[in-house]
Image (cartoon, helix red, strand yellow):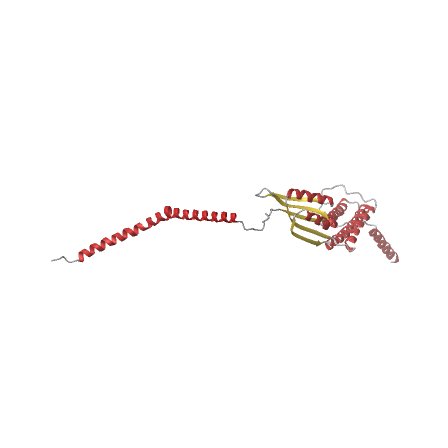
Length: 306
């Protein structure tokens, strides 16, 4: 009986040792789309690249949270100008002077042959006020001015946190891929981890792209300038009494009155009189018929003389 129990204990220990030495469980592949077999990427030779990317995310997030707000500035100007073509060239030169550029233009020619339209500039945010003043000086008059701002600091911070979490997941998947290769080295396990790693890397690139867009939009302000052609205003001198001018005006008024009277006579003779005659003919005929009927009746009623 004692030998039986010793054998049972040794058998139990042997099974436990075999279970500990067995390969780790394979990760589930149900949630991954299995592509055509391809050579998996080589394992990273070190952690330098991973640490560098993680450090970039931490740096971006700390910059956003350090008290420096990330603000997107937008300015719209409407200027009255003498020559829209020349002013547009001057404004483009000013944009280049402030290390900016013209991102869009839209000009048309009106019925009088003058150009009018707008151009959109991208100016460094720190130079926006100085550039705006010089651009306003290129016109003869500022018709309208509008400025707006949009704080994207919180949005940038959220993206930084998402990037940090995605990079941490990427590191864990790289370690898992290394472990699977060392212990299991099965194609199914390797492809499952590799597909998940590729998905996380795509998420990281997408987040970085969004952060890059926010960085560019906050670094460069948008300034839209509308150029309106200038209509020259005639200078009216103070009026002084001039008899000759008064006489000329009176004579011109008399001629206009006579012309109006002549036109009225012509209209009466050639238009209204014929129409009146045509309209009176039925009444005249009716009156004649009534008069004849009345005479005939009067004759019938008069008794003959004896």
